[in-house]
Image (cartoon, rainbow, N blue to C red; front, side, top):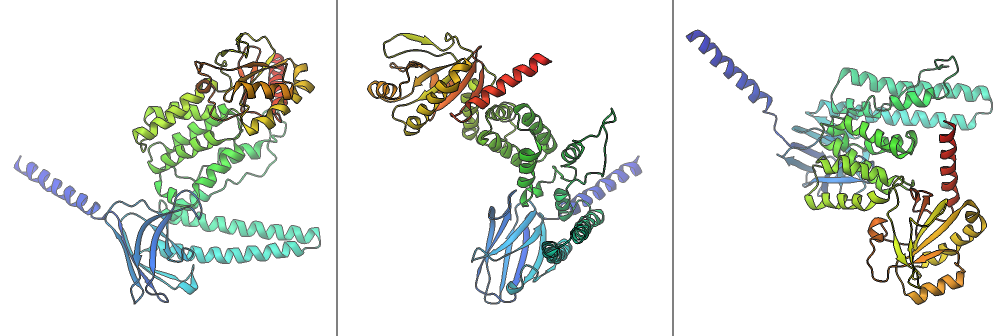
Length: 483
């Protein structure tokens, strides 16, 4: 029994020593910088945040002494990534890889940057310098091939040069693949993985029925787009890669339909779940993308993200007051997203007669919020009316116009001058209506298209795309009838 107890104590001490050793690596960094040809200059330690230059974020600063030495030092956790030492002219810099706990020395020659670097105590940066040198050589060879291609006079010459391009491209892929195999999990290896582009297998490729699958290349490329990206490596946020990859995936590879965008957003966020910075950047990017999208109806995807992520505690970095802004914005948009029944409006005209929006019988209702004091309205409203008289009326459209601001006199004057006599014109003299909140009216003019059931089919349009939206609705109905 005594031997067993002694054995347990010794074992626990051994484990304690191992844990102490594993935690001996301190948080932060210590970077000694030596410039061979610069003295008495300020230096800044900066990093990327998802995007290429000039979007950089300052981490630390130091000053070269009269001998060209400076030290960046911190004892707090530092998220790794590609960092830069930026000189006081804000244009001269060199890149390096930094991980939490790193301590190394870098010697730089300003006149020879970006290759005039040597590292001591950082094998990964030594390999990074070699890679940068290789890229410069690669760029020169690629440029030479471009010049040859421009000067090519025959198809045979052009074909041969294209083969050389492919060979050169394969060489770069092999370089990165070999590195990833030799140094798995390292920062540079994961950067190479994040840069990896799917290679579509040569075809032809066939469907189950024996016909050629013309969508194979697109489908394969999209399905394998994120294969090399490690969503659990937060260090990748401190590189210039992720923003561009998200942009290509959602703007070029994903069909811009609300349901599709929402489904793809869920997939990407699920990949990033469990990380801190990658998840944060992903949710922020998708929120900005959906909220600012010019694609009609994409605001529904913004509401979806707020309801399913922000309101469920996923936006952990936000202060309560900032979170409330997102929720408030979603609540303003939610009642009037495409596919919802338009909120009812009951308002009087200039003679005091009440007109119900839902009571207006029409195949389509064009709901127009405008003000006689709005310069843009005074240009847009006559164009809308001209389109109405020329084409919209024959398609069963009626116009329900809501005056948002301005005097009754000016309102009547504009109606008379532009002969807007076929419209139903209403306003809210006692300011009892919720139309501004219900329809998210913070500027004018704002146009909504409603179908015969008063379901919103289009929003925030202008005279140039009303007919397109009607045609889209008609086409959708025809397809539904066929099925």
